[in-house]
Amino acid sequence: MYIFASSLDPMTALDMDIEQTYKLIKGKWEKHLRSHGVKLPRLMVKGGEYSKDALALVYLARKYPDTVWVTKEELTEFIKKHYPETTDVQSGRHLGAQKGFYILSSRRGNNYPPGKPPPPGKAAYLLLTLEEPHPSFRPRREGKIAQEDFEEIKKKYDYRCATCGSREGESNYRYPGSVTELQKAHRNPHVPLEGDNVIPQCQFCNRADRNSWVYDERGRVVGVASARPILKSIKKGWLPTHEIEKLKDAISSYLRSRERESGP
Ligand SMILES: [Zn+2]
Image (cartoon, rainbow, N blue to C red; front, side):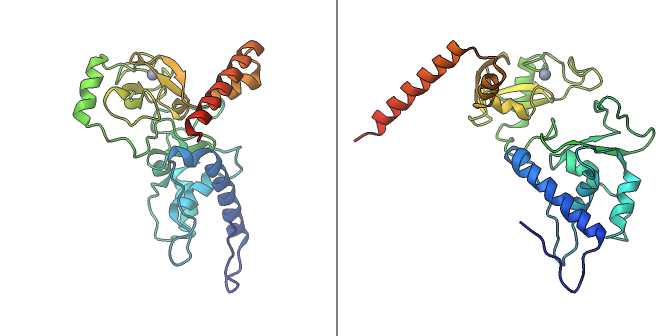
């Protein structure tokens, strides 16, 4: 989709930048983020102004993929050019915590990428990637399970992540700089998040790529829920030829039986 500026109001160089960067973000979002429930802010609000969230996202995505830490002050200054009355911009935080973009915050004790420490003593944000959602982002489809039921489940698991064993509120085993949060996680992502299908997982085990796996009640991977890991394994040569042959046979026999079922 292209966005045309009104002929009465020629685009400035800055606007061009904004629209081009937004287009890049939108392309990445369509390819990698939309299916995870990440919410892309609209570029324009009524009246033809850019939305504040879109401006913030564009600013964070400048020079993508070579993004840098952006302080809250810089973000506020940028948005002020469009909304002069702005005093305190919360978009950096919202875009990560609520909309699902993988934005690190200097105030949240995230793991910083090597060689990219945040500016000391300042609230700042870093857009890490547009190719995966924020690891602790949970699209709104959860909630079918009541909080008190989840408390019961967590208790059964001794308040530990079913998969890695990290304990709620304590340092995470795999990411010692981060405090473990327990989240409601699917055993099978194709089944609703309720009853036996719920296990507690920490924010790192319960990340976007979980949708590829099926877990048993002990949080161990017992199967795949998407073709992705298999395709990757074939591509990488992890699956030897005789295993690929087995897959081929299984797929052929599955297709034949489906044909028989739907036959005349
Ligand atoms: Zn875990």
